[in-house]
Image (tube, rainbow, N blue to C red):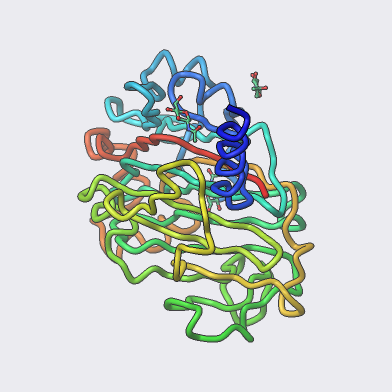
Length: 310
Ligand SMILES: *[C@@H]1O[C@H](CO)[C@@H](O)[C@H](O)[C@H]1NC(C)=O
Ligand SMILES: *[C@@H]1O[C@H](CO)[C@@H](O)[C@H](O)[C@H]1NC(C)=O
Ligand SMILES: *[C@@H]1O[C@H](CO)[C@@H](O)[C@H](O)[C@H]1NC(C)=O
């Protein structure tokens, strides 16, 4: 008996790979973990972020089994600040040694949309921002981006570690980059974002933030590693990430602190608005204002968010 329980304890420890589950959010209690941001969109989107009561009453949040839904108003012509939507910020914040695993079944798509699953620390950009899943309009490739103060660059990072680099300097005020461009990896997989992502039933985004830096991994559901399915994540066995941002003299780890998880969907604004005409008809704000039915597919379906710590 004693030997058996000792073996069970040993095998539990051995399978833990150094990561312990600290948060496991899904189902109706998911929304208890977040605050509903109701201010004006800092990125100048045409959006009216509503509080929890309003979101509930208007069907903008809900659950089906353990899956959580966040959707914009897709019934009414927009008035005032813009189309009604939700933006959630986790009450808890996380530090180095964290692994955030989000299982997402569907993400907002379509003209005018700018959804993001991301993290941000206080006194932006002093504590850094990690954009894990983000894009605009009809994009089909995910862009993982960091935003920091001066002194964090990926310019010295080996090219083999990167997909297509949009920009290398993570500093939001970097010379020769757009304001607040940050440093980013664009995934070359067209299932990593938007309609392509939804067509395959979504997938799992894992963000590992440890002493070596920040790595983001993406798997569609068929290829999620067994250790992730089992709740014993083993990043060492995962192979090449979709994005890698090493820490070092190029970017001291101190650029990232106290990250809160944010899930948002805005419309138009600094990014979606400025490139709207490349793939979408007419004027972004008029389109978002006048076509509620165009936003029926602009919803998040989140199966779970789990956070592990070293
Ligand atoms: C998170 O913060 C909101 C207020 O913004 C609060 O209503 C909620 O109870 C908090 N959740 C937890 C788990 O503390
Ligand atoms: C939405 O998310 C992006 C994350 O990349 C962020 O830059 C932007 O401020 C957010 N917009 C808002 C405030 O909803
Ligand atoms: C997380 O919670 C879900 C739903 O309650 C549960 O089925 C699952 O086993 C939990 N996962 C882990 C790794 O504990």
